[in-house]
Length: 227
Image (tube, rainbow, N blue to C red):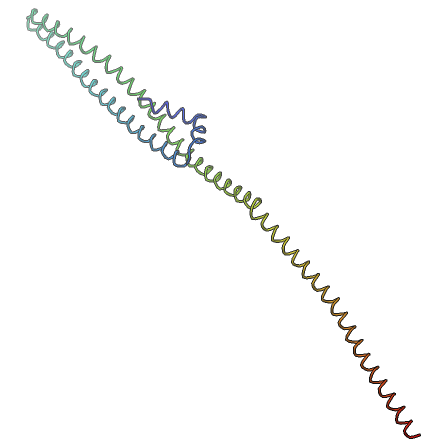
């Protein structure tokens, strides 16, 4: 009958943490514990109710036997008053037998009454433990969800450090490399442009010099012809 009560005491102890650490889903396991406890409490309530009913039956039988003893005593007095001592004797003999039966029923009733009181006390303890476990269940489920969330965040951060972060750094290095290549290309272009400009000026100067030399030659020729 007290299998549940003993099990509750065990679960409330450190063994609960051991069970949770092995469970794939602590939330579901806690719900199952509470469900089992509720069922066991229902079973114990039924047993206590049966014991209380048994106590009432014994009480009624004892009261009935005690009433019979009282009637036999009254009957014995009445027999003596009527002068029938033999009848009074036989009534008293039956009264004594009924008294023994009543005493036995009284002892059984008192024992049943004591057991009922003890069972009701244990049942109240079990109910209190049950309510305590329900409150602890909500707290433990919340802690379990918080732990899951923290673990998920940690795994995500770890993934960023090992994967995405290193990939991001590689892309950053590539961008820096591309920028350096573009800058070098601009410098080379600038150098080539300067050379082209100088050559263009040189070509232009050479053309002007040639034209100037041609004009000089023409003027000298004209002067020679006039002379």
